[in-house]
Amino acid sequence: MNRRYNIDERAFVGPLTPERAYWLGFFMADGNVARDLVQLRLKADDRAHVERFRAFLKSNHPIHNLSACVGYFVRNKRLAASLVVRGVTERKSFTARAEPDAATNSNFWRGVVDGNGHLTFVRGKHPRLELCGSKPLMEQFGDFVCATPKQHKSIWRVVLSGVHAQDVARILYMGCTVALSRKLAVAERMF
Image (cartoon, rainbow, N blue to C red; front, side):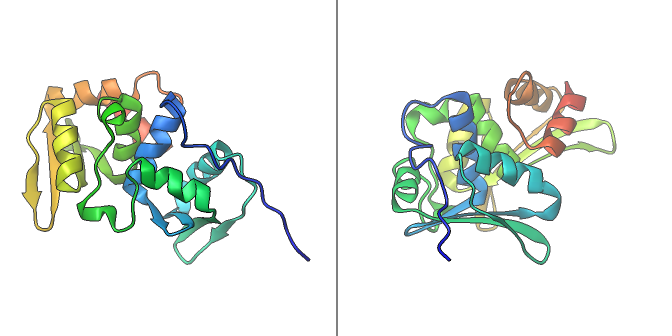
């Protein structure tokens, strides 16, 4: 029996709407493109977020339960190519770079922070926002938040604390329409 799955191959084509910008950022951080395979794996607790991504793609492809995570896998040349055009390439860990309109977009950066960032309170009361990634991407984030990225082993990171972390959390999360719920909850405590 052949199953036919639906997907919006053009989900990442066109101007950066808030939702498109968010998912582009999230996928740049946590997704993977390998030829025609588009894949996203998150820890099992974040299944609802994978379901939101699937809904954004207007897809009925299954979400797979893996050992400690959930996975969403789609083979689609057009969707993969549209992500590559926007900078989500194979082996992007050291080369990822936001396109110019994404580099100044708070929705895009919220997606990246949801994928590769960390929001916390040091000693229970001092706000801290940290983002790790490729040197080019962290330089762009540093420009966006007025901070200097630092090298940490083989990756780069931007670390914000105190009022600066609160201000950036407010810019990224206040009034947003899509976010990873556990990070949104911490961001809301910050502001």
